[in-house]
Length: 280
Image 1 (cartoon, rainbow, N blue to C red):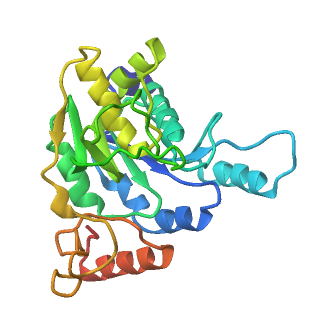
Image 2: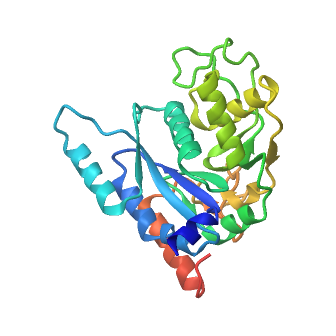
């Protein structure tokens, strides 16, 4: 029976990678207590991992001890070697991408932040109906301005990127890539390292730009028509109530909500459960 199962494995639909700072235990538990368990209902399968900076050796740290215990209890944490929680987290993002490329046969990589409320049903239904190759999905920024001040943590030199606007990139709250792109990035990075932008979400778009335009790596489809299903803050508003400050508000069509506290996340989940027999 085991040999038969391994002979024709059904690849998982997605590997969900949740980026979490070491100290954010409360956020991780809020996700484990709400929408994360719903991933088990998705077909042909969805697994999740929290990607975190590595634990420290050589000195006693209560936090490191607790993190290792958390990993042993829940078995859903990946400690990324030689990374820290220092912001911006472009280095941590690349380390997570490399881990995914080598360690899963899923069809997609779905990257999320740990302060995110997700309605799994419509999100994974979208992935199931999405092209399986050359796919880059999310809420895209086509006008991200490059920071030239060397004192700024987001500084990018002209040697790295000469234009004043970054290549298109999916904003970091939630984005997905087909696994062929993830593996292409990893293969090229290991063959000859890419130029690096330290801003995590920008960096994925920059890797793909280099892959296509500098390394003849094929093509990429930017799947950008689902932006109305993203809310960048947990607020309901209109242009009348919040002039010039009502971009992507909450609506009945929202799938993904960013910048949500654990308390609000639990409340939103309870409301969704109460609204019907099957949480979205």
